[in-house]
Every structure is written in C-alpha cells, then in structure tokens.
Length: 487
Image (cartoon, rainbow, N blue to C red; front, top):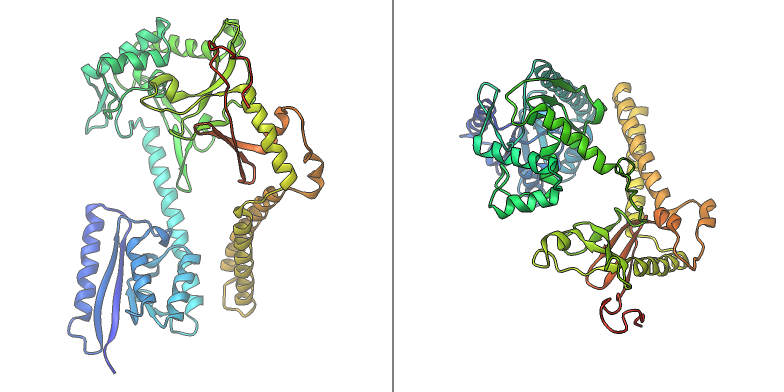
C-alpha cells in the first residue's frame, strides 16, 4: 500500500507582522512534520493570509483544497485547530461531511479530532461553538477599544481628506494648497452658487480632490457638511454590521462622540454654520417660498447606460411647446460625451407604465427568484430535520441545538416572507385590476425601478419581473408638427 497523500491547511486572520510570522511558522511546522515520514507524503500546503475565518466561501486556498479533494488528489488534511479551519459551525460541518463522503479524513491536531472517528461531529460542533463565541467576544472587545479611543479624542479621517494630513501622533495638519480649495467651496456656496456650479469651476481650473478625482456635486456637498473643516470632530458617523457599512444617524447603532476644537479649522465656525443654514433653506421649499413640485417617478428612473439617476426638468419652459421630461443626470450636467442616453417625456413615461402594468396584471408572471427561494426553504427544512435527529439521539448538546435551531428558524422566516412577497397573498387579488389612466398608487405599489435605454423603457416590478416598451417622444418642440403624436 502506497503512502497516504496528505495536505495541511493554514490560515491567519490578519496581515500584521505578528500574524505573518505565525503563518510562516505553521508552514515550517507542517513541512517538518511529514519530511522523511515513511507512511505519509505531503502533497501541498493550502494557506490563506489576512482572511477571516467566519466564512469559507471567501478563502481561495480553502476552496482550492476542496477542489483537489473532489479530484481525488488527497487522502488526509491536517490543520492546527478547528478555529483555523472554520469558526462558522454550519460551514465546518458542511465541509467535513463532504470531505468524509469523498473518503478524505480531516485531522484537527489541537483538539485531537479525526473526522473518521464515530463521534467526531459532536466534538466538532462543541469546538466550533466555542470558536464562534470567541469570535463574538473578540469582535465586542475590538468595538469597545474603538469606542474608548473615540471617547478620549481619537480622530479618524479614513483614506484621506482634502485640506488635511494625518500625522503619526493622531493630529491633523493643514495642507495649504488643499485648504484653499475648501475655502473657495465655502465662499462660492455662501455667495449663492450651487454645488454643480462649484464643481464645474474647480474642474475647469484643474483642481482635484485628495483622491486625485474630479469634483462632483456630491463631493462638494460632503465637504460643505464636514464639521472637521471648522475644527471639530464627530466620530462614529458610520458603523459596520455583519460586514455592511451603515450610516450611524443620531447614534442609532452605537454612541457618537462630538468634540470641539480638536484641530485647526480651515473655515470659521460662523461660515460653516451659515453654510448649514443655507443648505437647509435650499432643501426646504417653504423657507424660500418656492414649493417644489412632487413627481411620481422621482427616485425610480435610472439610466441604462451610465446607471445615473434620471431627473425631472421642464423642456422649453415658457414656450407653447413646453413639456415635462426626464433626462439622465450625467447627460444634463456633463454632456453627451459622458452619456448619450435619450430623454423621455413625462406623459410618455406614464402612458408606457399603464401598458406595462396592464400586461403584468393579465399575465401574473413570476420571476426565477421564487423558484430559487423555494429551493433555499427546502434546504433549510432538511437542515432543521437533521438537527432534530442529532439532538434526539443525544449527539448534539442542548445549548448548541438551541442556537443552531434559532438561526435556522430566523432564516426560514425571512425566506418565507420573501416568497410571500413575491407571490402576493390571495386576499390581495383585488389590487390586480386593469387601469385606463396613470395611477400613482399602482406605480408605488408595483414598481421598484424604471430603466431608460435609448428608446426603450423597462419597468421592474416588485417580484423582479421586467416588462419593456419602446417609445418615441415625437418631433422636437420647435419643429413643424411638434404637437402631432407619432405612431
């Protein structure tokens, strides 16, 4: 009988020097362990660096190891501990079950567990639960550390901020040439210029953001609302939850810390506050005495070319052929060289919605998403049955069973809610009726997005179904026959 083909899996969670040394040590350890071994041959070391153990899907080397096992290239996989292999219990059990079915043994050296042992799943479940708990504790400890630093005046400016440079002692130093750009932004804004006008003026003069990019109305507005430019610091503006960055508005997700005079300001506090008041005035039509018109399609229409939003404007204002239209923001503000997508009249957009909506009501189409969610529900139900089987036979601790069962239950409830939303309840059938004219209520209820792409408008319905219509706006307003609708 030939030598067993063995592999080792190595993972370090960060790219710090200390962790890299740990990574190198682990590689040396496994190579030394199997050198001159008469029964085992080391065929590979799979190593992921700077990767979290929370999910195996994001680990390229782990996935490569699984692929080699599926190809019959491995007999045994060694790893230092369960936490190095996977901290997520479900991922861990899924991986070792697949490997065991392929005839590949996994040996966890620290815990002295082999997946070929009869009670290995019980031991692995306990070890993985402990690893998951350690991960949670570590995450909470890191969050406390960050909050503690903010409480004591620690400043963060992310990847860079126009006008300032972060020094090693965590203080901000003004960059004179960049500070002049910020002062120019505030001066122009207080003089009555809008964010688009300011951005165009800066770009015309060849000025760029700290990232070396052209200015846009968004970057101008972000500069105008950044309290650091008057010398104060608001920390914890955003937080991460489950890997997703969220705006921490009014301390909704964690305490926020406002500290005055943490560094030299670029603009005066009076100018900064005046800019904030002016922004509020421009946002609120009642203050300026100009009531903003509300349009049903606002926020729904997207450019199919550059993916910018479509905005409402009046074409030919004050003329006899005046009409409401929707146009790509990029095309309007940067010209056809930036985006060549077409415009669509508001009346045409409403007319095409009526056509698309009526087709949807008649056909009642379902998207592929419904079938996918049904499959996911069935998979979760099987996992729940398997979990109950393990618990009934005493192969799973009560605490671990409760935790996993709750996780499965939450996922099932979420998926079932998604499916119900896609299919719509039977007692909502009264909502499905044909219309002869535009209905804002039906638009808001049924449509999630509208995409315009060169003479075609596509309506995306709540369940993912897309219905498209070709359109023409007719002749230009200053052309003969402009008021004659084309076929």
